[in-house]
Length: 213
Ligand code: PRT
Ligand code: MG
Image (cartoon, rainbow, N blue to C red; front, side, top):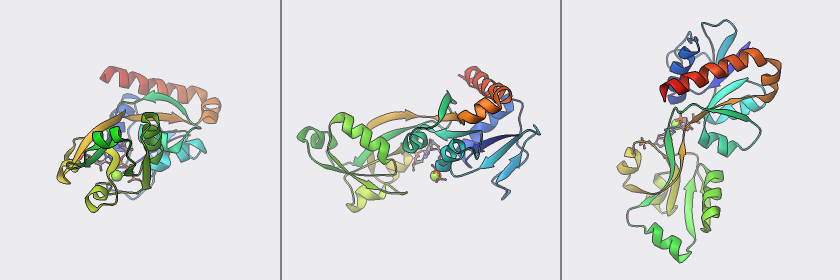
């Protein structure tokens, strides 16, 4: 049995065409069913539904043989996963945003201490350290946009796709940190134990990604 960890929402939706290209269809719609384990048209392949940020944990500890997770989630999780394939799905970017009346470039030039609220503390820490910018990081679990509006922080680090969430909250994107897409991650021990079927699945995903590029 091969177990694939996916999260509900955009990663599940965007993974369906890749699965289809590998000849796999899931037998249930997670938006309609409450099941957390979903069978597929391949009797030896099943999908487990977990929180996006739990996918690396499932794959690392063998709760799943492979999984799909955003680069943001993987970078926050840290090492311990074989990361073979950029699936180029669920694309967005990690950016710094502020209120329009906060002069970010000026604050950086002045060497001021900037208060940054984010869910992505590892990525933010690494980014500002590389730039030599002093920051006080404030860890949040959601609704980051609120932080600059309430005076909790000067800036946020968050994912941006269309930009409409920032716009709706009168925030402006002042710096792109990196492009983000989802990756196929594989448990190294599973890759040894189930080499042939996992390799076939990874190769099919790879071909599907390339043919869509
Ligand atoms: O379930 P849980 O809340 O723990 O997980 P999650 O919210 O991380 O899951 P989900 O499904 O929302 O995101 C899964 C992955 O999709 C993320 O890890 C990213 O790699 C990727 N992705 C792609 C995005 C976006 N685009 C995105 N736009 N994840 C989040 N957003 C959010 C963003 O945080 C912001 O609040 O959408 C808002 C911005 O969107 P725009 O279009 O208004 O700019
Ligand atoms: Mg979400």
